Length: 205
Image (cartoon, rainbow, N blue to C red; front, side, top):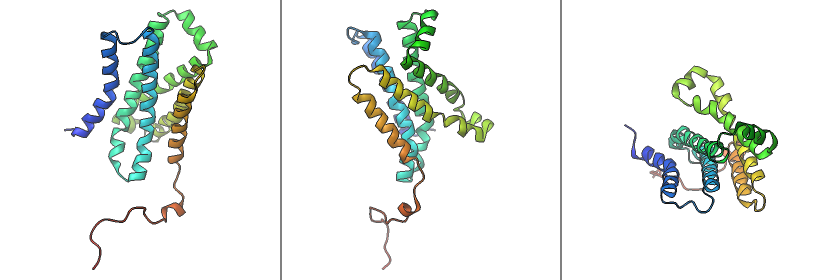
């Protein structure tokens, strides 16, 4: 049976959706509810994508494997919010007007890169099960390395969407770059440095 920590992380991933539902039923979305839902789901997709990418650096920095347990769940939550983000645009904004949808994807660059990122996320979500990991073997890791392309496209999508204040997408982009740097191999000279914190345990007498 899964422990409380697993359920706690699950509830943290679900909490933004529950809050969004509350805003919808309480008429708390403001004057432009479609825009609010679009931005809300897009922000949380990026939040969870970056959190997913942070699991490996956290394991390396802490030498604790507990973080890897939540990587797949966080990635699926990121996919869930990007589906909500895309569905909001498709249904509430475009009303299934396929001519306008195709025109927007072809002519508006920020939609083009966002739609491309969404398409790349689909095979990653489909192959996230343990059976698919075993079935694909070494190809699974190659497929899921697309997460770096998806993250880049997501940041570009946000950056091109914002017309004036670009501070928030720049912050997202800076965090994304930092997480990529932290995934690079650790140089040997850095491994040889003494620990910053004293070792615990019994010392020889």
